[in-house]
Length: 227
Image: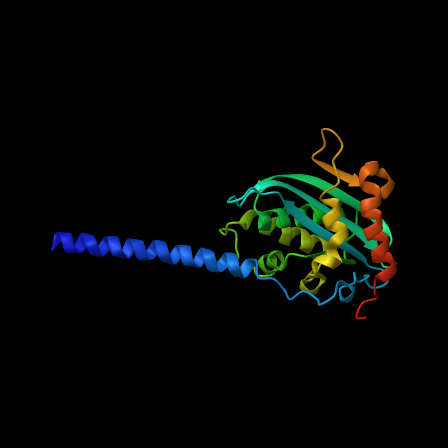
């Protein structure tokens, strides 16, 4: 009987572990579930904010080795006005992290800079990682005890301080967020962990044209809200 009970306890423990593993796999799959991409990139234009508003586009980037979920990470983003003109951009070095964490760090950096520079109550925020939007917009499901609990709380607090409503934090296609992606790849000045770019001309020369081509493409092809 003792052996039978011990075997039963072992089976229950294994079942519990399997359940946790399945839940973790399910969460990972849910978090990374992609949106259907447009048939043509031309269908996915960056959309200008409404008149009198600003738009913050943000992205996180991770360089991982095969079989590794974490790696060297960076964040980048920029704010543009309703005509599509550059207001400021930023690049930040992050601790080694996974893709979801890098996106959340990027959102936090961008929101913090927007708050510090006074862009309250007229700001739209976009990322190309829908999982980050799901995490932030579901506080009942993803609370402080969640894996990303601390940074989720910070993001929600910053959004509240900025007056950014649930409809003003959106996930967009990768092509609509390409300027932010390019900013994750701009080298930081020596000794800097975060740098604010007041102008594109402040970029290292090797990265100016690479970014400016995408930026001008957004300017020329961007649509008005709802178009």
